[in-house]
Amino acid sequence: MTNSKSKSKGWKIIFKRELKSYFSSLIPYIVCVFFLITAGFIFFSTFFAANRAELRYFFEWLPILFSFIIPALAMRTFSEEKKSGSFETLVTLPVSTGDIVAGKYLALLLSTLLLLVPTFFYIIACCIVGNPDPGPLAGGYLGAVFLAAAFSAIGLFASSVTKNQIVAFFLSAAICLVLTILDYFAQLIPGAVYSVISFFSARSHFMSVSRGIIDTRDVIYFLSVTALFIAATVRVLKNDKRG
Image (tube, rainbow, N blue to C red; front, top):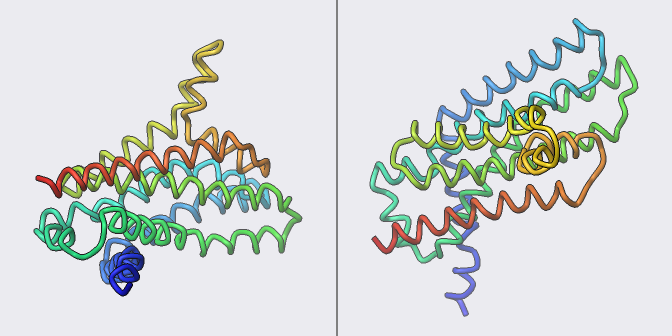
């Protein structure tokens, strides 16, 4: 009974361990500062220069920002442990591979979502000088959660396949960026092919949610991408464990 309880709490142990390591490293703080400076510039460029009290421009650029920010946070998740040799110790702990992936994934996702908390100030600023529509605001942040969930899974996978953090960053950023800009290229292709390509575009689904309209196709897309890369990460780790 005790053994069963300890196994059920395995992901919590990994989650707390990983979250503690995030806040003891300098990289997340650097990433946070970069994100807030860039996001602030994007928001205030329309808030003051264009005199528009809205977050639409910020949300339009968020998929591009996340394509680099999340890989930067995720690159050390498994790569650092594999390079230092602590990965061998990790897999010998009395927790399943699924627990390891779940704990690390949730810590990464939470770290990413915490980056969005300071941007709530943008909502306050908009409400002070204008009357923004709450639907797109709620949709934008809900879409950001879906996007962060999918891109975090991609970053986790990229970090699991290599010992080099830089390689993990570029691999993850490349996948996220391709999924982000697919709809730009899809606009150049007429006919039914456009619909097929745009369906695989993360930005297309994100912008759909950010309008305040929840479509099951958008939810299914993000859940599918997240599940696919988490499952792929589990598979990679199991293969490494056997090796």
